[in-house]
Length: 279
Image (spheres, rainbow, N blue to C red):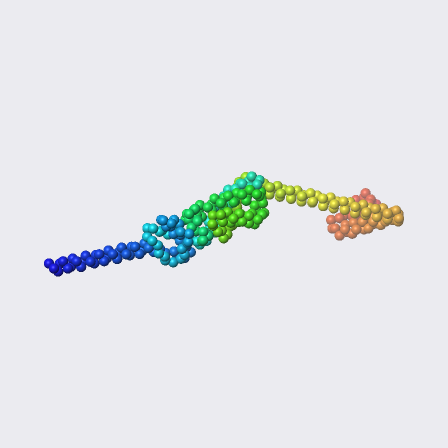
C-alpha cells in the first residue's frame, strides 16, 4: 500500500515537472522571434502602438500577447506594370514600365502605419500610371521614339520624386516596351509608302533632267561640228566635201571587195558576155 502511494506521488511529480517545462518552453518560444537577412521588423505594442524603432537581423525577445512583430523585406524588388496613355497628338500608346524598389528602412514604422506590409503593390502601380500619362501627354507619338532617352529620363525623375512621398526608394526605372495602336501603325506604314513614292518621283525627275542636259550637250556638239564644217567649206571651197566623198567611196569599195556575195555587172545591157555577136 505504501509503495503504491509512493509510485503515484512520483508520477504526479513527474507530470507536474513536465507540465511546467512545457509551459516554460511555450512561453520562451512565444517570447522569441527571428529577423532574417535582408529583413527588418516593426513591433506593435498593444499599449503603446507601433514602436518607432525598427529591429535588425537576428533573434530577439518580445512580451507574448502584448507585442507582435511585423517583418518587412528591405531588399530591392522588381515590379512591372503597363499603361495605356494618350500622346499630345491624341494617339494611344501602350507602355510597360519596370522599376526596382525598396523601402526606406528608418521610415518603416510610418510605412506600416499608413500602407501596411503590401505598400509597394498599393503605391507603385497608381503613381506609375499617373507619371506615365503626365509625361507621355507632353510628346507627339513619333517623338516617343526619336526622343526616347529624354522621355525615359523624365519618367524616372518624376516617378522617383513621387515615390519619395511614400518613403519608397527607386533604384532604377526603365521603359521596357512601347507600342502604338493599330490606326497609328497603319498611318506610319502609309507615310513610309508615301515617302518612298516621293523619293522615286525625285529620282525620275532627276533622271529626266540629266537626259535633257545630255540632249542639249549633244545638240550643241552637233551644231559646233556643223559650224566647223561650214567654216572649212567657206574657206577651202567644195574640195573638202569632194575629199570626204572619195574617202567614203573608197571605204565602200574596200568593204564590197571583201564580201563574196557581191557580183559585178558591166554597164552595158548585153548580159551574154560569152557570145560572139558576129556569128
